[in-house]
Length: 458
Image 1 (cartoon, one colour):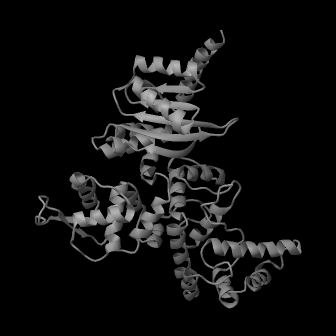
Image 2: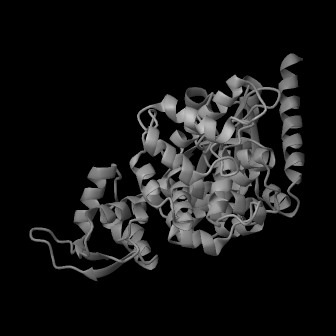
């Protein structure tokens, strides 16, 4: 069973306990978890009309919830964060705001809030089952039937992040609690790995600068293992960070013994805050957080991004295209093998899986090219045989699928158990106009495969 990414919270709920009181109980009984559980049981669960065993279990669940939320350790001692909350326990607003900020930054709370917003934007009702699917696409898991998001929502509601008993987000209050608004979160999410590493390195160094751009680059490589294109550093990293308002740039003096003139990099106030590091870490725990703004857009808007002059945007749009198509048939995202920025925005490869009736693994390649060639299909077949062990290969082209590519795909299906699905621009445009058309495409491709494989038996 997969470990939950959201904290366990049964019986650690504001509808069942008082946060200030349980912090006091931990302060008194910390180091003796049995005494702590007994005190919790006596205060909150002794009157429950259930068995003696179940009353003890409820108290134990409350303790486990406090552990999962980072308030106490296994011996019921207050953690450093728990001590921080205990010190402000008599100020309800400060207490709930501090806990909410901890949930948002350290317990995948930002992802849950963003996902709830995304679902409402797309007209989806926020239910636990649907929320579980949408969070799963972001790489965040909680067990089937688990109340983990509901408990988190209740605590965030105490700080005003959620409005009443609904999943509607009060964006003004969210910005107040978090210290920034979601537009800034989206801006950070849209940065490339190189830009994020550079930014984190600047934050780690601290101070007002200015710093030599190449020295920050070398430190970022050493610290995070990210390789930079030295000749392309200004265009790929420095200029975008300056446009986003994180740094200012000035021309430096020529480095002794070298021809290049590194920039002088000065971090802005947006970098020199305690929020930047935790925000970036929270985003890095998500799968493809940079896709969020694209996934909220219509299929037509995604297709327009595929034609962008910015190769990074083209690559992200191709990835969003793959997500959109696979979501239509309810497959589960597993991994990205090749992102658009690695190929100048020309292609992206992703892996999805399905478990309806039988397990299946799908690899999908989206190509922003005039035509799909035989070599493109052959590469995917080779990856399937030697690495991915997939059942289905989907190749989506914003252009055409060449005749040789189609003949090779037919030969592969005739000689193996692979199913190769080829989709071209007319298919994409038809799905844009009528999303359910993807069923017609898949049925068409299934009939072709059945015809090809049927010939083997004659």
